Length: 269
View 1 (tube, one colour):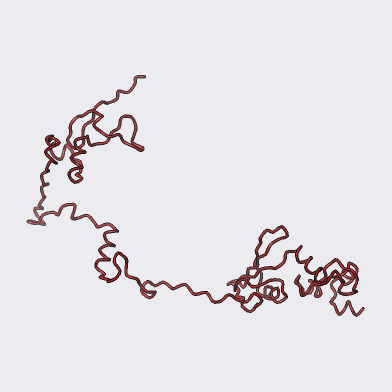
View 2: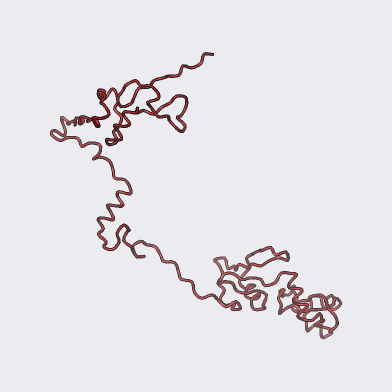
């Protein structure tokens, strides 16, 4: 297989002269393969730097400009001929491309600020009120509700209240409960109100058991002997909940004997 022959010269896109590759800058990025170079030679880059940025001239469009020494300044280009339409627009000249260019977005914004004539707001748009913009101002939050005030709770569209708490190992959890249960937990001192849509459970399972036993001094509520279990005054089968107001310390015998009976039925035996 024959090796490809690398070019040692390149034609300038501006003066259209063959010059060595050292006169051109290397390309960067995806097009920087092999001996690829940029289109302007060193002298044309100097002329473009001294003059305004000129578009490259194609060989088929205009003849090549004669090479000028570096000390004589930038070369002047002839003005392009303006085409005149013969039939429809006789005597009217076609505007140059610079006049047909649409203004950019920053230019339009600058013109809009200049035409508004708002005094005292230089460089900034005139402030608008809510009626002009159509936006509603955020509602100001009221005072934080009382942690024990269950009437401050407002359910969601589904009629639910968010309850959060922590497990025995300290891991946080949350779930949605209905409004009636949330009110019961707050009233029976098992939870507090965080905000109008959220309550927080005060005790984990392990902490709740230790709290009830220490509160009752490990004394059975029914017989007065030593107790190390927890019993519900209103059984859970009849709608009772695990709250400090509904749970008491009980011995193992009383707890099993009472079962799902109410306190009146069990004490009347």
